[in-house]
Length: 355
Image 1 (cartoon, one colour):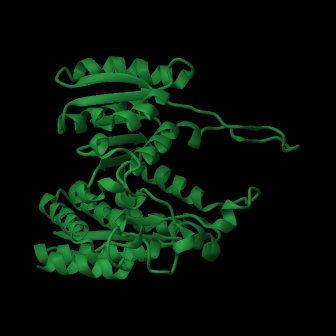
Image 2 (cartoon, rainbow, N blue to C red):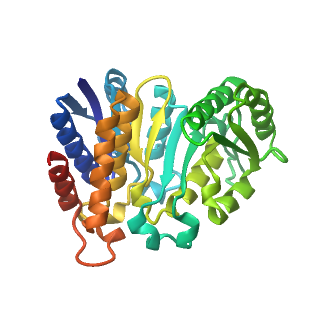
């Protein structure tokens, strides 16, 4: 199969972790006889520095003509610490999601036996946890208009807007995934307070009977935040709006033992994007210490979701599990022995895949 990729390393540790994931992708493609072609493009702070735009037109054109996008991370302290900045790296991420029609972010949350001791929760609570968070990605407060600040700097406002179409398509996607898993959907909202949440719940109640073999439960977001900590194994597919999803998925990620272990896929109308859930970690940039495994696992999702190549994705997961069991990992998850560099972990994974 011909695989055409757009490679967007981004900022901070992005170039280092994406390079590892790309090398793993090359090894898998070669092993299974696929032809791989790829081009690099700018996004985030590095794009602002070179072009003035966080998501340049040239980058969008490349994404649109590619089969999939392998993405690193964006963000830079010089923008984070400047509240008056007119252009920000994060605007590039939002624009990419909107322009590519990436309405759903899929984050699988599962634990690794060798990392249970790293979780902030008791091992018996997280051992065997395996659920999927589906976050609506192009609506809600992050894209609401009007939005702004008063001239005197004393007042700011954001608006949260959802349409029936936006809610219906993400809910149908959640039920689709639940049908392939343990047949349970948890719809998370704040319907006792927020009007958009009441629309979500109304539409969910209309859609649920279309899936009679799937259990549906409704949960307020504050209760869901507690349940993720108290009983993470109670979830199968959790679906929610943009802001709630942003917060809950980061909370869910740390119960597995490391933010550097969880991948994600953003899918929708045009080209899908595959990326780790963590940020650009600028403090580690250039030090060759960043954990590349979340990005590598994002490449596994890419093979599965973008190309329907399940064996290829499975081999990548096997390689990651083998590296964990062998203790060949970076410093953030190293418990015994000497931690390895980002590059060394990548080389180990490639050798494993090559057999």
